[in-house]
Image (cartoon, rainbow, N blue to C red; front, top):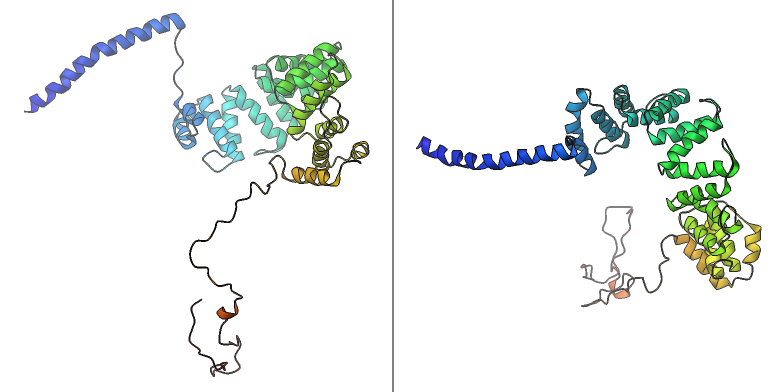
Length: 367
């Protein structure tokens, strides 16, 4: 009987061997055509799917063996507090280990911690050194930060030409902030020959990437016709987009265009709403106030109400839930005379004697 039980298993194994062999042949062909495949990173896969504790458990053995990618992953988990208590000091330690093992992302993130003094003592000189090392390893955000340090000229050599070179590399990698700053450098001729048209194009790309400050500047270029063909309607549209992102300058300028109907349909109520939002952030504009002096009181009230609830829509009588009709006997009101207590009770009796009654029955009545 013992041998009989082994036969099905042996038969199953015999059936699986050809399929396994076929898989190996397919893998060999694939590797010969496309090159060897990178091993699957199960820890990172768990991280991407939000299984942070699983990612931590899978990464720890590798990290202890000096795997830089696993060390960086653990640092990210602790830095962001994903599935564990946020711990900047522990994150800094793991970033340092990964940086020592050549991980450029870890080097950059460690530089950010030193720059802000999070988890480590604030040391901008050390941060600049780490940004330099990460940038030399080809990490784009590090190149952007290093470019800013060259512009500042305190923790790196004051060198606008080098700053422009680094900024262009980051911009050409489609980093939105770099697109915007490199466009500004082209407009101003900082570190390179001025080129208004090319500068406007870089700022347009930053605006399209969603950077609110770039959207405001590109709208202004369109309004003035600098580096681009003048287009008031497009300018108003970009101001509106930036205003919707909460940019206070855009809110004020968009309100002005709405108040006079320039590039957009005249709408005093809409203009008053954006003015109220700009005022909430501390920006007042007497010129805009004069443009809205003729707005009807009821329209101004609606605009203020919309601003209070922005970006949500104010509740209206149509959206308030109606009180459902009560089915069944109606309970008496607490102030109903027929439901009043028949016995006056002194909360602080002077004696232990029972309180006087009114002469009526002292039995408890149901409501």
